[in-house]
View 1: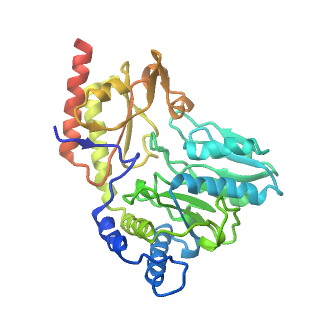
View 2: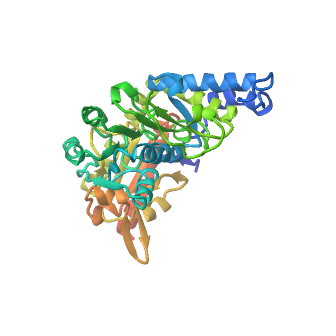
View 3: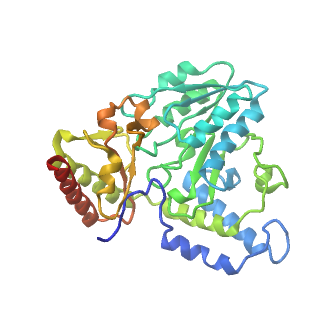
Length: 377
């Protein structure tokens, strides 16, 4: 069986156009972009072109882009950097229960240093109520951090509404857009954010590179202290190679038209599952406010890990784990209030630009076969 990859939310392959853009920088432009001589000039030019490409995707100016080692570092810089820069004004942070660990873990760390963190609940579709955000804001609130779209179920949060509230109250607003960039529109002024996270390996760039959008005038305490790289916001010699890869991927992601085909495939997949399984399959996440490539479903009465192990050559993710004979739901499904009988059968299929109709049809046929064997066996 030809392997089928449906785990694009975990990591994407590097797009061939991105590989082509990076290749010259494996052998050329080896100089330090900050050195200021002939060997550094090509590297510096490549770095700044990439910065402009990232800025073009987000609708901001290049100076507002800080290159990082990935989404986790960008989230940490946004959250910790804000806390240390504004702790004289307050210590309160507002976030949600369904954030990525790269947001939740920094918040837990900052609590040891005196931060007060409010974790807002979500509804059964994984969506936060903007009015809950409003009620959580206090005179000591210095940061709101709400992800743009959930990596597990694909639910898109009401970022524009929250952004308007943040501006109204003069509170800094960060969104982790690692999963949404390249799938839906992510213009920072439309979203109303001050800080926005990008992870390269979620949008067909290499692993090990990302970016943080920092609105002009927003100050952050650096995580990494050293020389004045990235306008003093992130010390460390920049990699022209990785920046070029991220820039090329962001240029590719500016065209969202291919996502219409991905959405159609995702819907074809869901329709086939409903037709084949009826009430034995349930959708996890919002039916409409959801990433166009993401389909998280639960096969009722089954265990997702066991089901996935029976699929031949299919790469996907599960929403529960079995420990010592007990099924534990993911924190996201738990926060959504998904019953254990349903959640234990959760599988996330995330499609990409290379996914085909034939692959979707093959997986549906496999699922029908393995579930029939499970019932009759």
